[in-house]
Length: 217
Image (cartoon, rainbow, N blue to C red; front, side, top):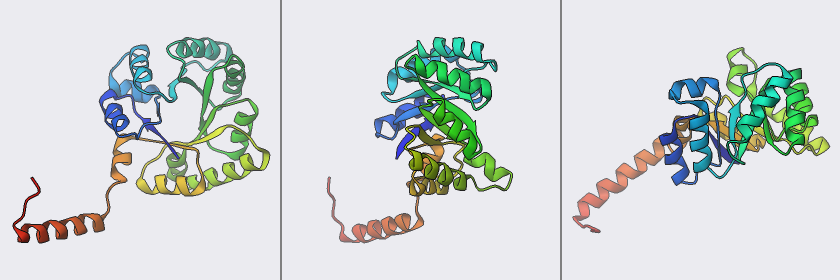
């Protein structure tokens, strides 16, 4: 399972990248706003840091304008994945941009039908939003499982990029179901290391070691 880092904060990406935990990065207008950086500047910096795909999102809502914005974003670096919304115009933009050899991440997916359309339009990635479905009392993980089944049934090459990850349980479930990629905030990825029994066991080992009076260094 690939880990994408869902942030535009360069320092957080660098820390995870150094540990081999950053297979890619996803950004969106909200994350760019939080970073306080210029979209072209910060996207270029992130793309130079990461070997894998870096998603940068168009702002336009009409197909022609999306395509032009997508081309400008794609020109930043060869590993840019142009992010377009799962609308009819977004699918038109996806088809055009992928036909030109660009990576495309079709975002804001909330149904299997939408995911099928994204795959048919040639999307590199489709991003189902787990947390936002959970917010309206639907099972976001069920959507991931359903898309996995349909894609496997027909051999679609579009990768399932589980997005709107809110918890370590989301991470584990996405892996169990078979999402190709999960994109999560740095704090969620770092929280995966936590377990009370690890803490308890370490405390016991350290207590016993102290009683030996020995030192390694």
